[in-house]
Length: 228
Image (cartoon, rainbow, N blue to C red; front, side, top):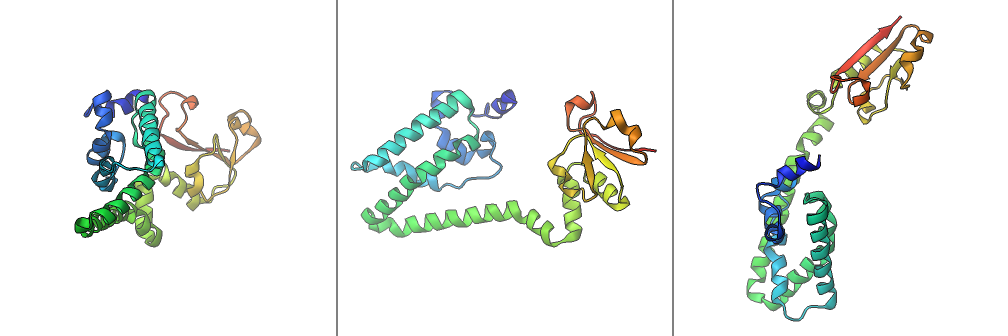
């Protein structure tokens, strides 16, 4: 898994140079850091301006040093994947707010332009969120689309539909799984059910191949077996 994520950032490379290019890459090339959509350009647009203010509060410098050290540890010693930098985004947000406020007060001629850029970034972020969550929202209110959506994104959904439709009794599964949320038929979790299946006549076993210890070549498969 580590090698897989490492391979995703080879487009921009690693090293000290690319560490300092991280703000640019995470904004302009989010896919290389395992981000599905853009985070917007507001950080990249205004945060560098903080270095042009000669008089900065001590807490600003402390936050910047913390972000540099924490970001370096994540980048060089863990893995440069976007989710690990979330804490840095939260910590640096007050610095961005301080920069915008001081820019508005000291550069009154361009304060209107600053507001427009911030507003455009907010609209862009809302558009990205709408594009991401539109399928889920549509699935929540449209039953026909919900079924197609679940069939596409929920593993073994057809098997769950079959069990729900047939109202199977004495249904057993080897392991519990979050996808069983869609399994409305009551079921029992028993990893050793095969050793005592003779004690449960007319029972069913729903076997989903999500676990490697159930046998080689069984990954991502599903079986519903009946025992009389």
